[in-house]
Amino acid sequence: MIKLKDPIHGEEPFESLLYKRRSVRSFNSSKISFQQLSNLLFAAYGVRNNGPYKTVPSAGALYPLSIYVAIGKESLAELKAGVYRYMPITNSLELVKEGDTRRIIAISCLGQAFISKAPVSIIISANFERMKYKYGNRGIRYAIIESGHSCQNLELAAISLGLVSCPVGAFSDNDIIKAIGLSDYEIPIYVVPIGYEEKE
Ligand SMILES: Cc1cc2nc3c(=O)[nH]c(=O)nc-3n(C[C@H](O)[C@H](O)[C@H](O)COP(=O)(O)O)c2cc1C
Image (cartoon, rainbow, N blue to C red; front, side, top):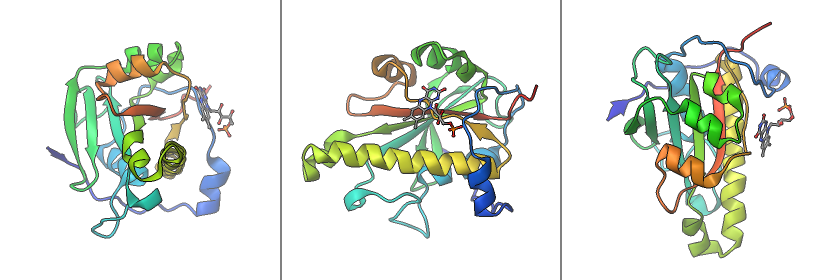
């Protein structure tokens, strides 16, 4: 288990984050810090005030999402390349797959090559069955809505940390499931590459 850091407070006013947020598709090779990664994951699905509630709203507080982060070679000083699962309750990471998967993720996203340049990609997946158990087919809608909440938090957190991101929904589900090593009941909803912008 790799313990993440507590999130630090950003300086920028909220409205300024809204003005700055945009989808960026060019990343340079700069590493991101362990603190930045910790803040990003907390924003995406962290537990607030000792729980049980999280940084995003959830229908029935069922929390159907799982958050993974694919870290490339030399993307972070403190972590080796691999796919890690975010464990919100313990604010930690668990290594699920070793190696740099960024290229295969980019290919799985219908060849969107910019994804392989970002130091990290965060994958938001949803367990529809958990929601259907309570809400029937409407549960699928609730899980997808919740993914949007998580992704928006993530993007605004990225801006507050001086980073940029792009929400990616165009991918082969099966290829992403294989690349990340998702289980049968985890459906990928979003791939979100994050890093420093490559300015022209
Ligand atoms: C559900 C969803 C899926 C998206 N999928 C992709 C994608 O696969 N590739 C991509 O480059 N951008 C993708 N985007 C980003 C949109 O292209 C982008 O948000 C839109 O052009 C508006 O630009 P902005 O985000 O800079 O405001 C997606 C956005 C959403 C909400």
